[in-house]
Length: 616
Image 1 (cartoon, one colour):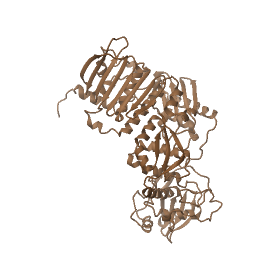
Image 2 (cartoon, helix red, strand yellow):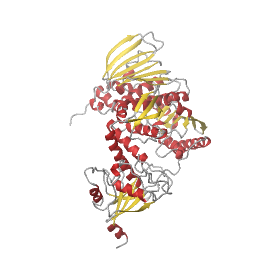
Image 3 (cartoon, one colour):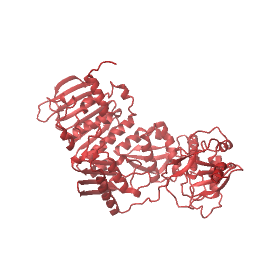
Image 4 (cartoon, one colour):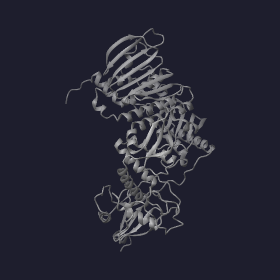
């Protein structure tokens, strides 16, 4: 082994940067927090290529003294704490004393700053943590920091950055959060396309919500103001009619700091409860004030999370107040009964493509393999329909089943797809019936198959949509009334980043004001009766998936979601004709064993297994 040596300043700073500066949004966070702490009431942020190439933060705060500006870029230098006791009663946002040194270690920086009482300011150039140039400059009071070529000297870290749109949306999310936390500050975020967001700086949180989320969310705000015991809360809930597909829009500000905390999340989501559909989350904007001694903001290097010394009490108080506030309000739709239970099944199927197999081959393959092992299937998010409420007419037209099966159980279905017009079950397959309006029971020569009706129908529709998309390419259907999309700046960035891919699918989306987009056309494979809520759900699903998948996977995700929405739900009554058509069509699909979400479709119980259960 080599002898022990002290690391050079440059290497030590680069290692330290790895804890604090993970991506461009980390740089923006540290710089903007410093601007807030400097008392600025106007902060401008400009980025290029998602911040990977260029970040500039300009404020009108108190500035950095010319005699201290180099010291500000050294490690463990700060004006915000002086002893360890200060850590336990923090009020400033940035306090660690490592941020500027960490940023400088992995980028090229230009700094301009002047305090109001100084005649002239100072301009510095720093590369890789080393001072390159210092000079006097005539400057307005405040600070301007420009960061170029982030991670230029640490390429191993640069390659782990995400695509430009993803990094840009993270910065939009961050500035949205900071702007909501400080409504008295005028924030502006720009990129190469222009202004992404701007806030009025009026000091009114509702004004900021309007500028960032638009009129529809603003009109559904519910004020929440209370003071109990050690807790003081102000801000807004949003009517449960407005919801999102992720927790991205639950904002909590503790003593002015945007934070994450599991107790706050649980309090809000449990209070909203069944007022929201399954799989949906509320929008909330809550300022929480409590004694700093009860809050530990030092548990994470980037201060993303905080810890409460009385977390359970905070949760209980907040949940009670939100619940009471929602009960006072009117017009809430209750979504009770949408959750489904877990089912213990036997399954040895794995996802695979069988496009080259014939229908009979696929049916024979159902009995291939060893005995099954028991496993749990997670409960799904599908809403339960009233039993005995469907008919078999137009079963495969756009994946819809009408609502009159109970009255016409023997009516013959007209399958509109020529591909499915002649299909039928083989002679040794016989539909026995329906189990709990959930499974189709199918007798075979080898035993019994339990076919999940939703998963089976979803697979059928998905394959049909894939075939239709291949035939129609990017054909669009114009909406009779264009649909305005009021999005947060982060959501707008995501849509604009993937607009080319969406247009290739058949969507037509145009910019419509600073915070809105306009949807004027949708792909032909989306059902014609898709209403406003259905289309908004699809847009929400696109926003959610675009954060975690590649652009080329987007079309498949949209088809999967569309198939899921169109498929017959668990709890729906099916006539015998419907059951026969679903099971016959299932075995003609590319994979009759798994739905597009990779959930099992078929459970097999062989005669040997059944006999063994009764000691035969």
